[in-house]
Length: 191
Image (cartoon, rainbow, N blue to C red):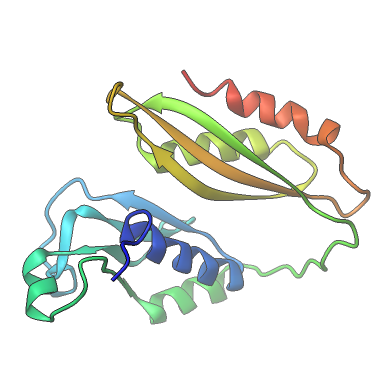
């Protein structure tokens, strides 16, 4: 079989992000800081897994790569990751949140990839929240999607996190000049 690009964790995470987008919510992925002793967490390699929460802090599930014993026991391919979701809790959380309908924009979106160099100890979610705080001041709808996390062998203390920012206006067609100030502010977040 052909080797897959990237870690299986990120493939499953992209699927979960697409699900969240369809449900008009966003998942927050938090690294595990302590060992969990629940049956639902048993098959996961805790070093390569994350907890899933809604933005208001409601536990929704877990995503990650499986322990090697599980992969061998079920004869799964090496490129395997899994997710578990508390669907009842997720539906309950979403029904309590106010859902505001917003029609699609008549104007085209503008996408820009932005790379930020950060310390290797910096968690992805912390970097993403920093980017989101810069974007929060904009008058546009902005979608933030992960593209890659790269760490060169020559400088293991630094990694480069790349995001794809998609800006959408409901009032006009955007140009590069409209989004440039936000991109510059985001680039300042790096080392």
